[in-house]
Image 1 (cartoon, helix red, strand yellow):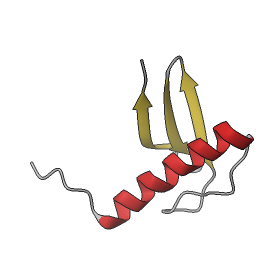
Image 2: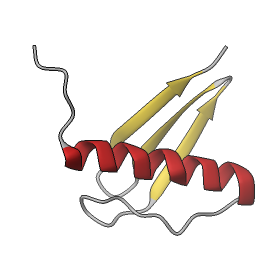
Image 3: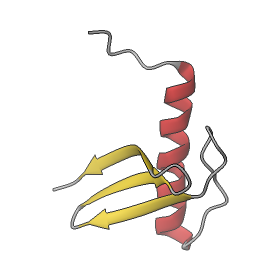
Length: 66
């Protein structure tokens, strides 16, 4: 199985992570889904979170803390 990310996917994950950081720091972000332009939503559960596109209801990235 090839585990390399395409440049587009890498950019999409970076954009989602930046949106999560901005939302945590300031409470809002102007970043949008790079695929469809939809709003990015961050859902927190305990020490974990996921970033998804609201329009497509598609998870872009997740993070799991301790």
